[in-house]
Image (tube, rainbow, N blue to C red):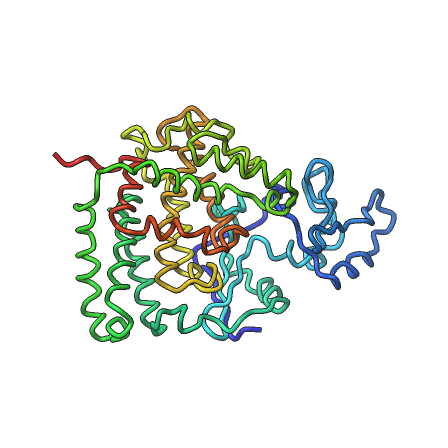
Length: 419
């Protein structure tokens, strides 16, 4: 087991028995685990599923009921296995959700709770740091790599990594900044520290003197943002990128020709500005994309900044636990991961706008942001499609300052045009 386990200090989680995780995910099983579960004594309990394994593309999973729920999901919405035998007897995948446990520095792992779980999204229940005993048991059953490589750290020493992360969290927690301004500053911080280079950044004494003035100076980006719109090609690229975040586990597992052709047709329609998000998963808004008017928003779409608290928490927890690069995000380097973290905002904003439009709203509400954050956390660093570098090329396209700010302006018109 790793020598050190770091957990988020701000997240809470207690299961609310909603049953959504028992319907949304295909639960992967280990061979020894299958034998153990088959040997459980259910006594005289009726209708116990004995043939509970289904093989998909060579891998064993829990079988599904006709309504999509796990074969062990009871009519009351609770897991029958949990109710009969307790938490410790369940499959590792079931016991591990909603925790995301990732190798960080050598000999260390960090733990956060996924916000695609409704209880985590609501920050409901017991602080996860108080669940250390259960998490330690999970860690003992998992295998981890050797931690961040020198290439993934961009040559930065650990104190330097922590200094930049603390600076980013300081910006994120600044309540005087709207969420749009905050993300603009975070992108500028990533850009400017990257340009300084690891030799300069690793000089701790110098950086202690420089960092306060650097944080102050990057706010100048707020006065220099573009008020131009995206061109047709850029809009198409962004819609394609959004489609990758809309894809769900169930669709990815189905590799039939019919499904692939249908997905390609739905993606092509969405890229062109048509189609429907619902085609990518049942949890998405059922609304033709042309009605969203993605790049022609009303001026007050971001009227209430307080509704973005779940998204700020998503960013802060990722920074706190170092889960935005390396093993947590497709093995990319520190600065690439930090830039990609900033780029989750336009994805979240676009998804929230689609959800609002499906509910006949132009101004965003809390439900819209909650839906978008859950969608985002479901895929960020875990998408079977986004694991391919070619699928993430749009990140590099929009990280450039001018194009990034034009994207934000196109999605929300959050600042006024200069006269």
